[in-house]
Length: 304
Ligand SMILES: Cc1cccc(C(=O)O)c1OC(=O)C1CC1
Ligand SMILES: [Zn+2]
Image (cartoon, rainbow, N blue to C red; front, side, top):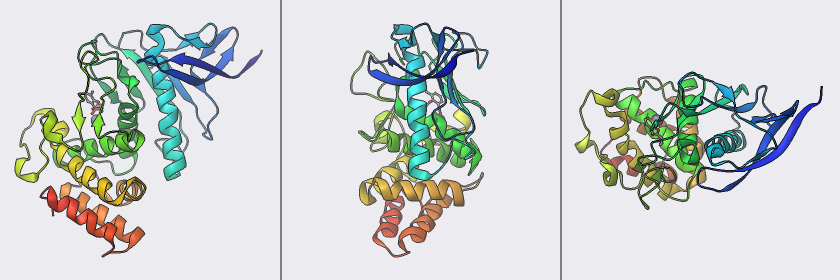
């Protein structure tokens, strides 16, 4: 039986050309990438607008994934490959579990579903309702956000509630920035497709989207698991100040080390400050300019 790795192409959610690592078997092409140094593969499936996952492999007859409805599949596959490459090349981490396990993304989940999530085993993306969101895999920072939830789950294990949950969210947004560092916005490529210049969140100006950026404005609530998508504005602002001060490369090192070595399931904002300071000391020395910049960033958001 002739089956092999193939190279295809397609158009993403926003029409961008994307080269794709695909697989051919018995007359059909699959979004199935066997080119990475992993024990598993990177594969993309469709829920066909139902809710059973992983659903069915995304398939094509001629390896030209150019149908409008295939945009979500194309971007989920392409962006997952980009995030895999980032963690492998920048942090020497092989997939979310550092054991090269398969990365599965399921698109076309639900109907008019304005969400994306890591379900503990795979990434899942809704198509959006066309007003609030376009298909959510269309944004690299969204895919990086979701895959970072998986990394966090396998490392720090930050509990998804209250301050540890807001930290969990912030780690996903900060690594979303590391992947898509052209701006300080989150989700801008798929948020409100009919409205330009807006986003789901801003790391540099959390208030622009209703988030606090200082402990004085911490929101005490039980909704959204204790406001995890609201209070993440505080560590996000500290992240923006840190990256702006020490640069992306140093920030990537101390954030990855904090996440994988020092943070624990119940870490709060003050623990995050300490973890990042310790990571800065490990790499650059306590009292280094990098160390002092981290301390200053967290001072500015009222976390000590
Ligand atoms: C759109 C959305 C809804 C609910 C939860 C999440 C979640 O993954 O926390 C979510 O995705 C994001 O926040 C990504 C960054 C845009
Ligand atoms: Zn999240």
